[in-house]
Image 1 (cartoon, helix red, strand yellow):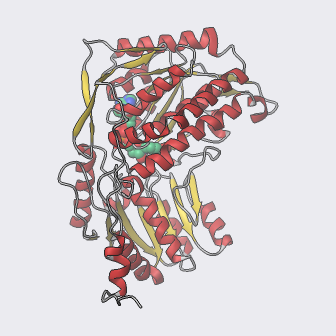
Image 2 (cartoon, rainbow, N blue to C red):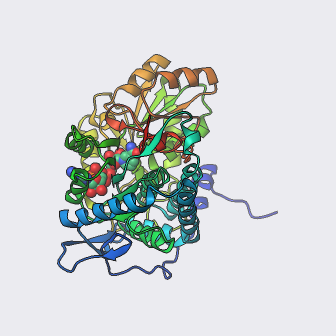
Image 3 (cartoon, rainbow, N blue to C red):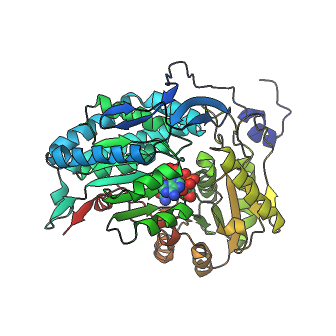
Length: 493
Ligand code: NAD
């Protein structure tokens, strides 16, 4: 017989047993240039005279590379390259030919997955297990999926006459840098358009690695052009006269500016904006499974997810049990070095984002909600925020209405399904919700009443290229993913 442990069951379950030895992901094989410019007309370009900014690792605050800023003239050059490629080549070749390039890009993303995952984590702060297991595989999957459609567009919209739009201008955010690039580029190219895309200023690196992949894949010059910069560069793309379509993913605030800028120009527009998703947990739900889903829904990627389940609506009679289990589970989350393979919650993407989270969490306390954070030692350098849960939240609190975009969960209760639906719909947004119930009929009835573009049943944050994604209300319009995602890049008559 072995020596008997003197530890309590609680200690055994939530104490030492959960302390993992460090499992750092090596970075020796990562080769980054000191400076990145743009990828225009099949060439890597960048002028010494251009303005620059540094991209840093938010977990260490160390500089990773210097990045050029594209001004209006550089954006114009990229749009001209895209137009030339569209007129002379891309709109003329068959769908099967376009598919070959897309398949090649997908396979090359798979081949270079490890490098891409590590760079994504270094530049953006997300845990390596997410960039490795979610972002990069899904980015490849999007290219594979739309490669499959490229020669079957007539079957996608039977009986209709379809035509590509021309040159697409695309602007993307920092929370899923490579994946958002794939969401934008793959359907546009499959449908026969050429693109000018701008990554977010805090996460330009995997876009530049994608440019290298596109170059090695032999994509004809000008079909994909990637320019770096911040808001002014994005605005130069949006406002360029020779852009036929604007696709934007980012904040609702910037989405509104873009909608105004595009109004009356004849440019087609799709907007994927912010969210304030709710997980609705009924008293007949599988509670432990729901707790895991709630944790995944808000602490996954530090809550830097537009469709994050940042609100929990829990039926009143099980609220105490669910909240207790949530707090216990939060206490086992590993917060820290994003390059450690055990880390659950990595670094906040930037100082600005950390300040915004801190300000909104402060407003929650000031407005009277109860804050809980598990004991966790945050690293001394870098931008980190402890997983946070608020109880005693009312629907009018800022933390119940505004997108925090951080690892912060606001808990509200409800008594009836109707009250749950009313509370879930009571925000300016309408991007995502999760419903947890043992009863299929309840699940479908509630789903039908929710004003959200994406609704998960007994799960959360599951993505697939075949499934359309998009919002209602201030979460935007248009769909990405699935056959619907092609519509954003085609004229269908
Ligand atoms: P942001 O709106 O600040 O920036 C997004 C992009 O727009 C960046 O590339 C930025 O440089 C550019 N930009 C800024 N000002 C611009 C302007 N005036 N004209 C053109 N481009 C401009 O958003 P962010 O902070 O990078 O990203 C977080 C936001 O993105 C959150 O609100 C999140 O919900 C949203 N998001 C939505 C989805 C979705 O699918 N609905 C997906 C991911 C992120």
